[in-house]
Length: 163
Image (tube, rainbow, N blue to C red):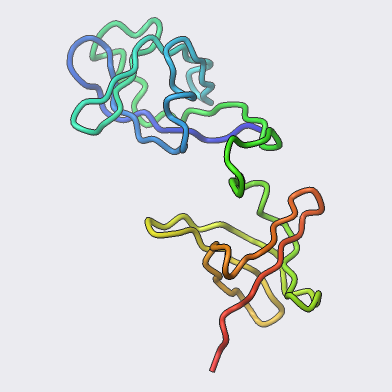
């Protein structure tokens, strides 16, 4: 699956590096030297340098030798082909696209709704579930989502009690 992994920002310095707005949780892998990313407007880009500067990721690209070349790439979105069904190194680690569209059921087995989105927040992720009564947000923590069955596209939820 083609997934957005970053956006090229402004040029940095005079050697063709650009700042990167990272949109992946695996920047070391996606942006490793020698890796390729695809774009809609500039074809495939090969990464020639990777470094952090004051907490900001800087990348260099093959064929981009100066500041002007890096500026031409500004605001370009970068994509990678990702196998979202590849097993994770961590238990209970899911890709957003694996969760969207899953059926949400209550512990009793009654259907509650469908996962429409996963909202990434600093403290925890929230599942946005479309129900017949509107959208319900449920923190994506084991206490409220005790069972996730990706193979059957189903998860068990304990929704908040509305008083």
